[in-house]
Image (cartoon, rainbow, N blue to C red; front, side):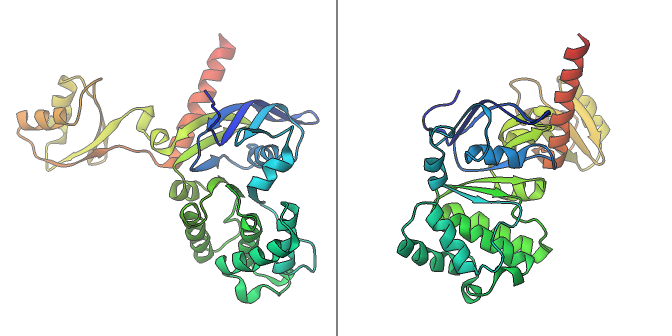
Length: 317
């Protein structure tokens, strides 16, 4: 249940574009930190960000920092930085004009806006390019200047919409490193919206999984990556894997071969000592034992498939 300390709190949020139902009853709360908004293109990620900023009409309730987005959108936007997916500068603008304009829109006086603009452009690596027109920037520089304008008013929450879009591998690594340092160096929480799962896995502690406008998962990435939604172990022995599998099955484990390894689901209440005991009884040597974790991509697919299977079962019932 949401409380007053939650960073975000959405309750039954719907958004329609004419007959198209873009958001379908989003309900979740986020306590803070760095978290990812996952989903394929068209899942509703950008729409959700614009709802949080008070830029779109919607049904339901949404709060940021405990502030009602619909009732007090300007207050929310003064505390939130937004890096949009698409370019949003006016033709002919240079970086100083662009960032200072954004700072003033956030409520800062002109002198303070200019002072912060120069500081943030240095921070984002654009100090020597600040007076060049953005039209002539490379893709990497355009992404950096969008990040700078999102940070210029020192926000408490940063909304990043596909921040590595269009970047080459080196530019992507530089952008991810810059973002990763922000919570410690700037003291802000981050919501990263991306269809690139490795970006989310690298940066985030928690994730919200959107699919076709619905929330399929909200929680820690660690829990999301647990194989089959439960705690399992990956076990390798020097030799005799089949013998160990038989021994573990006799102790109530569910064992699945995976190449040279065994994926072992332990009985309720059991720990890794059960594996060592079974190996000792079978006179086998355990060479590797670690928690089994799915890749984020595999976990995403599992959650989507499980949710859709439940829907089909409910519709058929």
